[in-house]
Length: 218
Image (cartoon, rainbow, N blue to C red; front, side, top):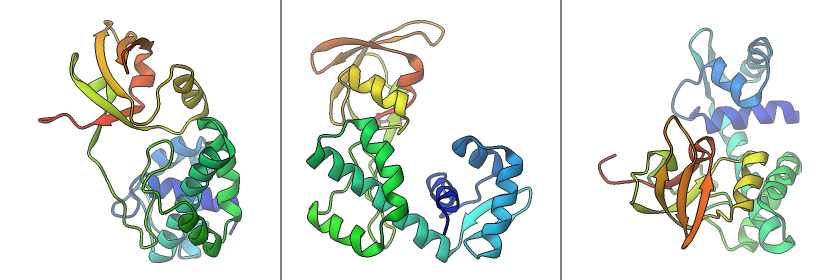
């Protein structure tokens, strides 16, 4: 299977394609490709029985596609753990190189890597690592911008996007950090945070891609 098809499988998986229809627009936005390219690729993947594709409605993974997607996601996130834990990679470096390694990692290596790392539940960016059967250990979360001012919480996950990862790392934001919004400027202005006792200011856009503990009642 080509890396391009594998990227489509992974995108459909991340967009919820195990249990529900994912529309072409979301896939195009996630992969940053033209809608026509998505339609063409999904036609090929349907013929290979990787997806169920309903024109104008959406796509979800077949059993064959699901197993391939889970293998890719597991490989990617386990490599991120290995690269940061043992080779001193930064957040964005680990994500970039895991994107390459996931395409050349056979199931045998993924299994042994999982064992070597003592079966981590989450990648360094906070995303759950699926078990071999596809099950994941999920924790209720919400984006930081929805956290009420003055309420203490903890960083649990961040979106894997290079510029964001570098930006957050520069500001000392890591998974597990204690965090509290001190102030929020009007019109989606910057947020002032208490981060582990330090005062830090980040953009509203970044706050929408940082996930913290679910607040009761939300």
